[in-house]
Length: 189
Image (cartoon, rainbow, N blue to C red; front, side, top):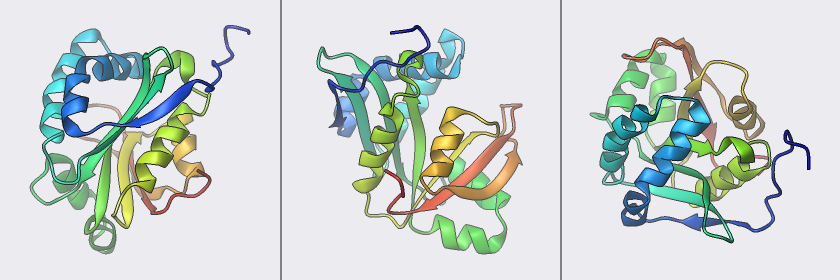
């Protein structure tokens, strides 16, 4: 296998993680987050504070990709988006009124979806996203992602996500983001 080839996804299973299990593995998840995003290590500790709070929100759902040997190689989680939540309120203001009403009323906010760099491009992210989306009672899934051509952005496009807002600047982050939405069920999963 060449170094650029992702490992096979044989031997990787996607597990349902209830909130308590997610919190138990929060450090592992944040290590994946930091590695996947190329962030400084301290960013994971900061994000863990928010992630712990997210685990207590209505509609919390999480899936993790785990090797047969027990190594966590990816995860995705989110919750029902509601008024009063930081992301929800910012996105509501960013969207035209018609989009805000039709997309935010019965939606799941995909807060995080990350895969270790060595496993990116292998289908792990698609499996985590697909199994998570298939479990949801919502009519839509929403997310924000850096507004650049990445594997993640291409995955979202391929599974049915459309633009709701582009070049959006969230407070505290100078990078432009795209806010995307998809009607459930997702396609090409």
